[in-house]
Length: 299
Image (tube, rainbow, N blue to C red; front, side):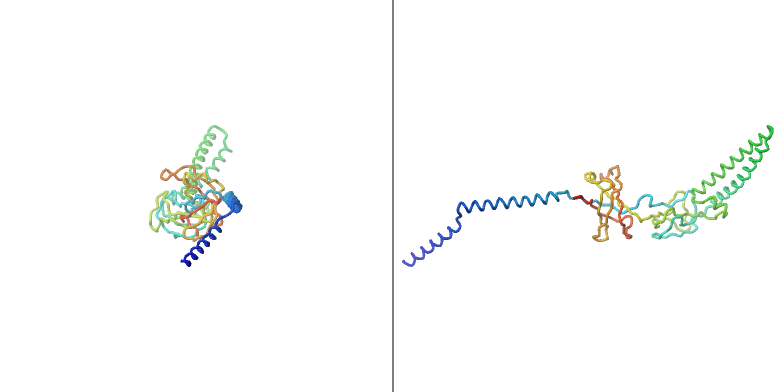
């Protein structure tokens, strides 16, 4: 019994000591409370400092394509049709400005050159005759002859100029016809340097007037065509800097600058086209490549 009493007394003493260690004085509680307030103020200060520097709305991502400006792409067509006699193009082949892509066979082209040469020769003769008649005019009869020569001269001049204009529309210099004679086939030349694409011609195919033979693209200065929805268009301004990645080219980023914003809205999805000029374009860029771009946000 005595042993049980001793054990019970020891247990009560230990419990009393434990409770005493957990109880804090008023002074200790005040110190802890002060520390807690200081810690909260410090954390709040740090958060406010970070948010004031970085509290910028996340820039949305804009999808789009690599393309080229309209003056960097040309569709080859002719104002006079004909059957393809020869072709010197392949899709993807590089061509220079003025290089012959194909030749067309059309008897009307030969007749046009003949008309120009004949009218040019007649014009030269009538011009000299008109000048001679003016110098010899003395009476009413001779003056009447001067007027007749003038009418013939002007009529032939009109015929010659019309034939020359038709040749120039076909890309043929009238002077080259005079100097080198009649060409049997109509040459189709590239108006710009670039690469052949969308080739629709082959030997023997008849190409109608105005029908496209192929396209030529110059991808030396590509641009981006981005799709921006109405809710985000306020974020875009001419001159804004962009960063973009090209599908299939890994995580490498490229830079671009906004150069134009379309003024119409696509009725199908209520989007607006935004165009940006690429800086330091990669040679691997090709029109039609898919891109994802983000606006570079200021500090």
